[in-house]
Each structure stands twice: as C-alpha cells, then as structure tokens.
Image 1 (cartoon, rainbow, N blue to C red):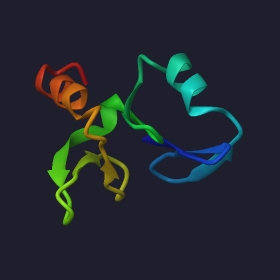
Image 2: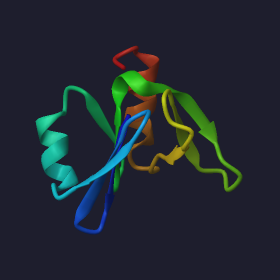
Image 3: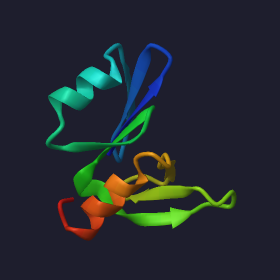
Image 4: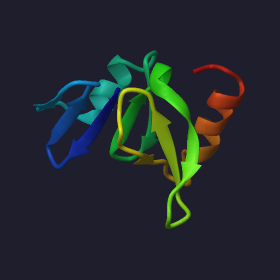
Amino acid sequence: VYLQADNKYVTVCSATQQILIEESLKALEQEFARYFIRIHRNALVAVTAIRGLEKNAEGHCCVLLEGADERLEVSRRLLPDVRKRIKTGVI
C-alpha cells in the first residue's frame, strides 16, 4: 500500500503487515515508478490504493488509502502532481 522512509530503513506497509528493509526510497521509486507515486520526501504510495485526498486538523492534505488506516501527508510541492494524477484518472 505504501513505502515510508525512516532514517536508513524503509517500512513496506501492506494491508496486513509491515516489513523493514534496507533499501533507499529513491532506488525503490526508480524501480517501481510504474506502481508508486511519491507524495512526500519520505513516502511513496501505490497508485492503485489511492482513494482521494482530505485535509487534516492542521490543514495539510493527506492521501486516503485503501488497505491502510493511516492518512499520509502529501507535501505542498508534490500536491499538484498527486491531484493531477487523481483527476486525470492516471491512478
């Protein structure tokens, strides 16, 4: 469902489990560019899992993901690209 960087590790989160791997988020982004979109400097999400966007209590946009209860924040810099992909149906 998503990949999230934390120091030198990346947490791979599926609907049922979380696994830590020692791979850079940048390398994973290049390898799986067809399947994941970067939403923040520390997170990639599966494009097929994106269900929409919502604002959190602080007013930041977060992505709604199928198969995950977490709401991951979308950076302001990447928000236009995420919105465009949702709107054009390239998700």
